[in-house]
Image (cartoon, rainbow, N blue to C red; front, side, top):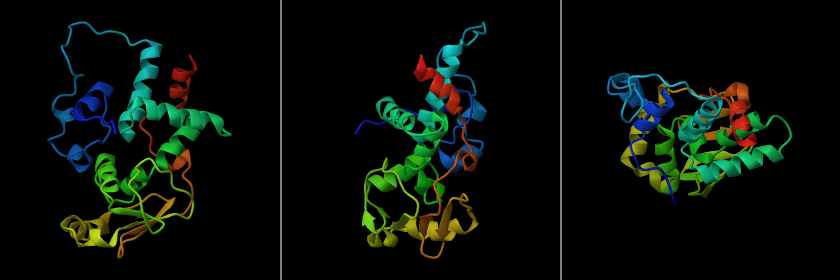
Length: 208
């Protein structure tokens, strides 16, 4: 399966803001955006004005980078959002939030979506009592997310049990900290999500 394998800090620098792609590292002095905030590549002395099309592209790329999705899959999510009733930009945001790897990240099982994706791909996570290794699987209201019994013996799981006490979860999720099991109480709404991109601008990008 194709995925982005280069330095993710370059994506933040290209977007011009922190996308929290490295989890807790983004809050430390080691964060590349704090040390080198300029875009990657050779810098010219003149400031170039970004066109409207360029701004739309930047918003679309920020959404892709944030959720770790390549262009082809992102287009499929956008097409699905267009087919649903309601505002396309908001539908897109809700669909991205419902991805299993994102829910694993939101529950605090991982420091970043990339790490959550790896946990799912390696078969550590169970959805409704069944092992699944598909990060893009969409969760539904009432779904439960738990750990495979064999994975509870790993060192990572033991450290997570100790560190997860201080973490909070979003209102549309619930977390059993003792058993490290989560539940989808409700489908998320745009107000529940702290998005770093504008869905309306993404719709404008694909509408041209």
